[in-house]
Length: 166
Image (tube, rainbow, N blue to C red; front, side):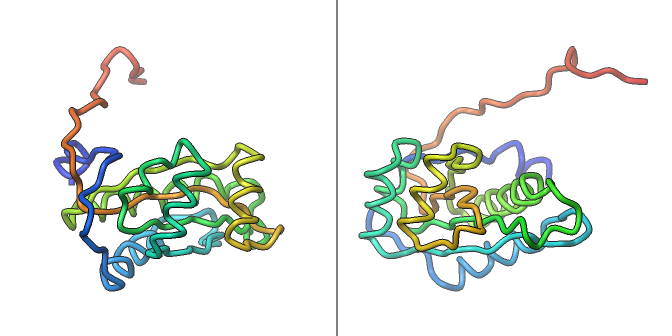
């Protein structure tokens, strides 16, 4: 598992003409739904997108999600605060679901990139409007997915000086 974590990268350029199947998306969504959540509330829903026009519209309207222009698919994580059993934990819950998708995609030979929308009010509201997401829910993030067309260098690393042992 540590090797999977060490070799995962944020992929911002995907090979055109490659598809992500419904079966692959279902595996990624299952990984997301296996994430831990406070009180097992699972305050999330998902929108899986493979329609080129929607991916292009996301890329064109949100510079931080420009990689959707070459992505074969995207998963939108929608936070549902009304499902929380312990108020205020949906960001951690949805973050854990996001990380599970990123790791599962890498394990499957796919690339993915987490494009943050929460807590940027304008982005969240605009994406919610574009995708007809109910106002009681939050467009948390967009995860672009596809076959990688780049191999970025590792950016994260262990920093011993940032650890206090007690």
